[in-house]
Length: 110
Length: 116
Image 1 (cartoon, helix red, strand yellow):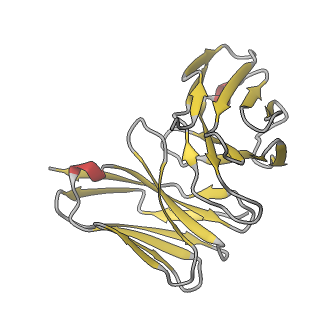
Image 2 (image 1 turned 90 degrees about the vertical axis):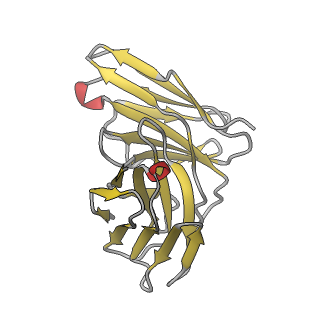
Image 3 (image 1 turned 180 degrees about the vertical axis):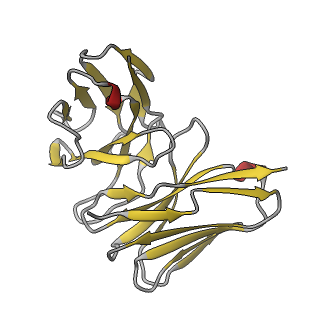
């Protein structure tokens, strides 16, 4: 079936260090979205990437979509305690519904 | 404006009971999605509506699960004869998505279902 794999499952970083999570699909995606879920909360939309090779930035967050539209990454520069949470990628295979990755749980060591 | 709301926020059901979970999407949002999220996992797609039409129900785990959106706004997810494996958080999301393209989804707070 259509699956979206995400690594790593967990990431513990010192405050101020960088963080990256990677997302991979076995088949080409129509677009990919990223969501953040705080502990005890619900997923909150961060960004959508549509074009091959697209790069988007939101302050300290950089999102990339691969040339083949099969992989994506989220990079956070100089993490802060407010970045704590689980980051999910969610792929659209062209059927309008999202297939979520397993998520990367980010914890920050002050 | 108001976001997506869900009720109840918490539901404890005895095995075999029927439950009904409600979702009020953002006004004007055409598409509505239901997801099941197990502890430590990502949301798993259950079903999707565009207005009142249920376009995809491929994620419903069994015929005990049924969803409806009769007037194209409020939606109800019903689970009959609940089993322990149904214990999870049920998330509802809505979006402005039109046919053929997905847009950002706005999630409700979820209903945490515990089957004892």
